[in-house]
Amino acid sequence: QVHEEACRTHLLGHPLFRVVWRMGDKIMRKICVKSASFQVLLPHDELFRENYPCEAAWNISTGVLIYNDHDAPALMSTRITSIRKSQPLGEKVWLCWSALWCHWIHCGTCNALESTEVLRIDADSFAQAVRSHGPVRTFLHEYAASYLSQVLAARIFDDLEVPHTEHREVVWHMDPQHKKSHLETRSGSVACSTLALRAAFQSVGDFTEGDYPGKQHLGGDP
Image (cartoon, rainbow, N blue to C red; front, side, top):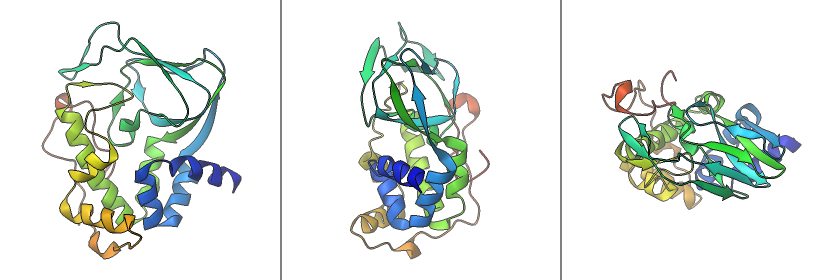
């Protein structure tokens, strides 16, 4: 119970999880229990390393991390990662949010600058947790499709940011049906009937693995 409440407090800081919570408190509880965990880092401990597969997203609870990018631009699926040298990151910052929506390769390396606690959201466990709730699954499938379209369009990105993937921008590019549901949810009226289940979930578009740095997690086999 304590773990669940602690995770919920951090997750509800992101507008997407507030939408999910209003759509179904039980699914929010399942996300907290099944996919969220806290991780403590001592000074200089490594959170992740450049060019390694990313399996989670993190939110900084306390402390400071330092993110080091490439010394020079590097290609990733024909796109260029940003040139940022290093950047300190404080509380409430999300890292590797993209890992929840597609298979991601780290663009840089992240270490603890001081004793730090982060909330870790395991990408595969998150996908499994939301699959049990049809309306939430369908909504997040559309969110993932919209997010992935921005990843495909981006030329410069890193583990901290992909252009045009702020929550409101992702929702704006969603299917009108699900955008409407999002707006109704925000007003406190959850019209789950507008979130019809698809007969079958498919990957977004006709892409091959060489075309993009990730494949969709939701709505099919990861």
